[in-house]
Structure formats: C-alpha cells, structure tokens
Image (cartoon, one colour):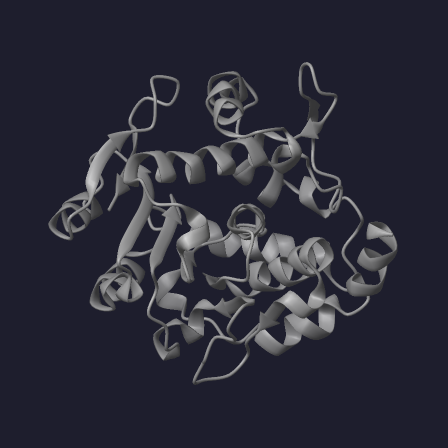
Length: 280
C-alpha cells in the first residue's frame, strides 16, 4: 500500500514543485546548495524515481556514517519501550540496517534524528508531546518532523522552511508516510500555518509567515545558510520560540546569539568531535 500511495503522489510531484519553485530568496542559499538543488531538480522531474532518497544530494548529505549508529542507538533504546519508532519507512528506498535483537530495519538518518529529539527531552526535561507548535529551519527530506509527529502522539502544528525543491520533496515524503491530509504546502504570501498539520514553507515566504513557535529546531541547516538567512532568523527571534534545539559546529558565530537567548551548549558526543547542541 505505501508504494501504491507513493506512485500516485509522485505523478503530482512536478505540479506541486512548479507551485513553489519561484518562492525563493537567493540571499538565503549558499552556492553549494544552489548546485545541489539544481542537480536534484533534474533528477526528480518530471516523476521522482522510487529510490529518490538515494540521490547524492540526499544520500550523502542526510544519512550520517553508520559508525554513528553504534554510539547513538544504545542511548535511544534505553529511553524507548520498544523499537517501533526506529522502524524505517520504505518510501524512497533509504539505505537501512537491521537492529540487533529485534529484526527491525532502521537507517542511520532515523537513528540520528531520533537521538537529537531524545537528547532535547533529556536536556530540557520537556516532553515533545507537550509542545504545540514547532518550526524547523532546513528539514531535509522530512525525516525529523516525521519522527517528531510520531513521538508527539497528537497533532502538533509544524512548520518547515526550506528551498523549493526540498519543500516539494518533503510534500512527497511526508504525504506518503503521514498521509496527505496531514501536510500543507504553501505557495503564496502571507502564510498562515494550518493548525495540526506539517506546513511546508519555501524560504522565499519565510519572512511572510505568521507563527509563534514553542520550539525552534535547526540541525546544521543554519550553519549551511547564508549570513542573510541567519540574520533574518535572529531578527524574527527564532520565530518567537520559547525553546531551542540547535545542532551546530562548535565555535560558529551563531553560538553567542543562542547563548544570549538563554541556550546552553551541550557537546553532541565524543563520536562527533567539534559538534554541539545549543538547547534552551
């Protein structure tokens, strides 16, 4: 059934991408990501292949080295009653591995993203299920938000800001794994997020989006955005968020801005030297 649903959604991918492709602010996107986006567009149009998550712009940017799994998985399994949340959705044919002792297939991306969310809960003492509105800057193909919605257990209002091609990829992926009714792709200003859905907002509409977040998340995406994008996120005061979950290179200039906002710097772990969380 998931693949039948994917095939139907994939037929409408070009239509959805064309709606948002001009919703971009070139000041926000570094040249290396401009090149990756164009390469990904050529690969996905007019109909994305069934293994679209294996394209280099996704596979080698968003699936960490599997050696990281050995460090993060024990932390996750100590905090979950079972491995259900680790089970990988087959959409996009992601590279997977079988978990020891359970037979559940997961991916390095799912382990890594779930590790971030559980570290946030541990560090802050807050539970994701108590959060009403989440904003993510740079959502990849939608994996973290998929896990957040499932960990939440309810219907949080979620907003992902990204480049147009990735907003379209997120529409495809999240519609397939969460259901199309749970996803809203925005293509014009002003943007009013739909309550209880994952709202996909191309970055050209970011400053025209009305949202007050309970939690703002950006895992290395702000590191890989331009100074103009970083400035505008700060000007918006992290989109009004009460709480932050940022993963960044240690020493990044944004660190001081997050610390000024009340965040704490927490090392990611010895297995990823030079990387840290900024959590508030």
